[in-house]
Amino acid sequence: MQTDSNFTFVLFGGTGDLSMRKILPALYEAHRAGMLEASGKIIAVARHEEDRGGYLQWVNEHVKAHVSKSGIDENAWSSFLERIEYVKLDLGKAEDFVKLRDAMQELPGTRVFYLATGPSLFVPICRALASVGLNENARIVLEKPLGYDLRSSNAINDAVGEIFAEGQIYRIDHYLGKEPVQNLLALRFGNALFEPLWRREWVESIQITIAEELGVEARGDFYDNTGALRDMVQNHLLQLLSIVAMEPPHSMDSDSVRDEKLRVLRALKPIDPRDISKVAVRGQYHAGVIRGTSVPAYATEPGVKTDSATETFVALKVEIENWRWAGVPFFLRTGKRLADRVAEIVVNFRAVPHSALGSSSLRPGANRLVIRLQPNETIRLYCLAKKPGEGMNLSSVHLDLAFDQFFKEGQMEAYQRLLLDVIHGRLALFVRRDEQEAAWKWVEPILNEWAASGKPKPYAAGTWGPAAASAMLAQHDTCWLEEEN
Ligand code: BG6
Image 1 (spheres, rainbow, N blue to C red):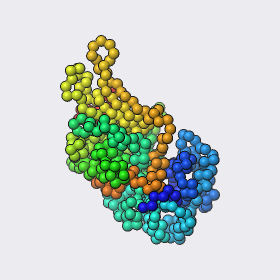
Image 2 (cartoon, rainbow, N blue to C red):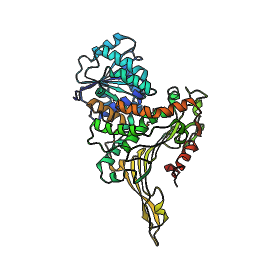
Image 3 (cartoon, rainbow, N blue to C red):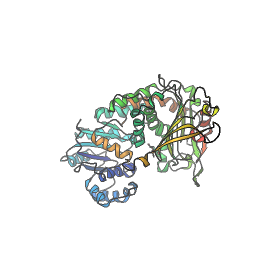
């Protein structure tokens, strides 16, 4: 695989929401930071705009607003626009792909095809690219969701795999591009301190939460056919889990890391359909109040069926069947319209076996590591310390590492990192087919059971989801982090 950094980046779905909010802003940031080869080109592909002038006007009107906090540098913005070409393309017309090939003829370097489209278009686009020879010396980027279940994702992977080799396929899970997720690897494998403790003998339970305040926004139609299990658990949460639980890889090359993640995914204890109600909670938000603002119920959102049984909240108890983690519950949770926007990993260590210092040191959670992924990336280690004054009274204290204070600059958005990785041919942060299959296999019994029976439990928007999610932890004598006082 060629690794030169000159490139032609072809963006299918060039006027779509993802291009507008994430991909073009990320490319602009990379350009502004001087991280893109000067002669690299971006070719946007869409049906709606007639020509380059019309497309650039659309970019000016829609993309600028999504460029980061640092704002727009007008010089960098105009030189960024110079990189952009436009090809009006109708996917059904073979001659339009000839037009695309002609537009790329003289352009050197690696070809990247980013499919920011629905998954039903992945295969037709790949086939059409192959029909004009554009699959040679190329990388293809597939956005999630990749399929709807194991069967449909296999069908896409099989068909794309006939045209592109696995090493040319970049399956995006944007959580893997987040700085703090990278930091998790650094924390675990760059420090000897945690490794001896990172196992069943010392860890009592682990929680991984991705909570959102936002509802389904303008995506009701898509979301109602998807639900939180497919949208967040099958990919982001299981990827985070595999990074938390994996064995140290022998190097950071793409297959070493992905092999280790795969081992975790394959070691997930299969869920017996009869146990689903004990280890899985699904919820759907009703009207409520978030930060003083009333928000409507999920079932009244545009695009959502009024009698929808789609879950907007999931909590799961997961176990990993290997020596390191046998018996340690991993609690995963995600939901929309929850009380806060937060993504964090909580590692609860076991209490000391005996304390001469009184019962407070025997309390669960006395030693705990909280890795806050967003917002305000922080690593916080909780310990007990003696309260000043007379007697031996213990109190919880913490050591904090706030990344934005420590590293004042250089933070990179997930999409920027991932797009640069594609351009440079680095696969480590992309999901390999076997990982994806293992994740689908594991969630499938839950998907099937939920599709066949019952409805999600209601929760009011602005809360932390159905009470059953707390009850599930209570059975293990623990609670979600925010429930501690
Ligand atoms: C996407 C989901 O993959 O991740 C969305 O489709 C969700 O529903 C989003 O809102 C969350 O990402 P982030 O980076 O905002 O936490």
